Length: 114
Image 1 (cartoon, one colour):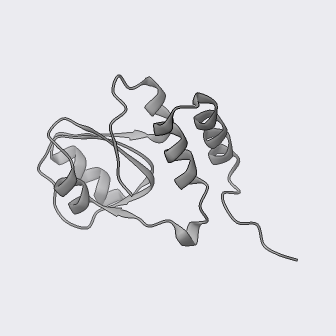
Image 2 (spheres, helix red, strand yellow; image 1 turned 90 degrees about the vertical axis):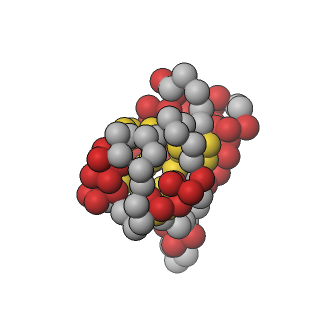
């Protein structure tokens, strides 16, 4: 019997369906990346966020943020999961960590990092 691919977590399935209901390209791209199997998702390092983000920008990570690298920019990060060190480093830089569901409440959508 083949194994299911993609998310099996009911919370993630609910988030994906809510993103798809928005029918905007930004939300559809985030949903597409969340639908990937865990094996095909890549974690995003703090260093990558530092390189690609502007000061005060919203960053959306459809996956996990890990603590590799350093960050000095104050950014708002919306992600599915965070490692403990990633949360600490973002907060030390003056940024904020949000769960991905909170992207619907954000004033600006931000940049997607994969």
